[in-house]
Length: 203
Image (cartoon, rainbow, N blue to C red; front, side, top):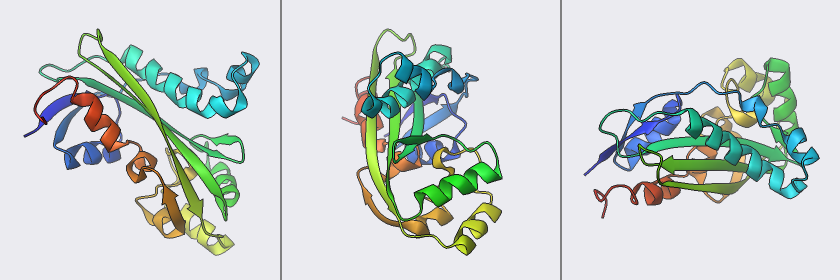
């Protein structure tokens, strides 16, 4: 069986992941200023360094939920946000090719962490559940040729950390510890568990 939710994201990857577990998505992206949740501002407000990635993606997902509106006949609203952290630096979506190149060089030969926040609410937003899933990803050492070929493929655009693990960057990954789907943008087991609280179609 399946159910239908409102997905406050234009990400085709998230739609595909939901489809894998029998959830149809009514796509309804929201326009929010993600830069309003700034790691530097969080630090100045006293958020501990180790908590900043967690708080950054969770607060951004909450911001999207505040702006989201349920589509008719959907059982829940889903919002998500992903950040990549390498050696203490949050790698957001690159602003241009040069920024993407800097990120890929930084990730080369390292183990970094990917944090994906999920917020799910009923259509009236009277009940809400949230969680943050952290996954460790290790990259092989990348040659300059590999970096340039990846940049030329344009997969770095509009994605945290400048790479898509389900695309060509999958060849760079030596190990993943945690949720692979969370690195793609949605921890599907977490989403499944949350949506089960609003719908009995899976139980």
